[in-house]
Length: 349
Image (cartoon, rainbow, N blue to C red):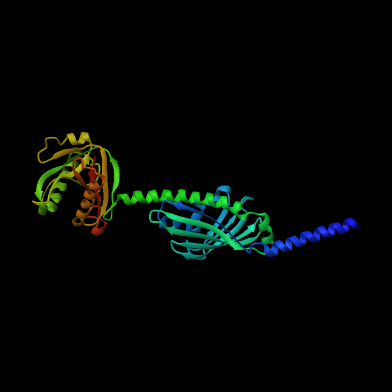
């Protein structure tokens, strides 16, 4: 009987302790981690706001690569939902976007089903630092009676904090790479034109070369291309590309140009025209070149050439020889001038 009384006292003491812990334990919990990412807020925001993009940096996706994830709802908007089911490391559950403040904050309702059921709120807060972004990732919620008791024995910060740190490190890696790619694309842009840098092979051209007033260029091209392609056909020569103009000189003061209108051919075929009256050949050496794919009427291509000049000055480069225009679209086949494709090439060094 004495032993039974002792056991009863112990049980009552434990119950009393549990009740006390349940009464005095913390009613709320929050765990958070922060990181500064060298990327624009818009870049980071895209990775944080869209639940589908979370898979690119989630620490739990690393823990269970075979985890099944189902995404529903509009990307980055209230109501978007991510449901997951994985191994014992990640369990199962879902989160759903509950609040969005663009480029600043996201709140999601986080519902764990396995290994035990619980509900929390996940928080993402972004601070724009100009050339970088401060991201704070947190989880918070209310402790029920047993939650208050368990909080004495379980350190949420130690349990969740390392995963947040790993996830933020992954987010930094992903966002930094995307920022670098964005910067590279912006470096190509000048006055609205995308300027690619390409390695071009050496090319030899056959054509009619003449210094002419700008006002005569349309007539010159019409006559010259007809003559050149007629001569190529008679000689059984296959041109290696579209009709092309090489500009050796562009005289703004006197409004005239030294230009060759023709086409690229093989070196062997070019030799067939050496010494042919009215025909010239010219070899462009291999090397790097700036390239713009311009779409529009020919009268508007001047802006693309001006962009090329700015790009050359900005990069400290210089033209190697001629400016090249390849007329990819035949205006006779396409009446809509907005669809005319001209490839503008500046060989550089």
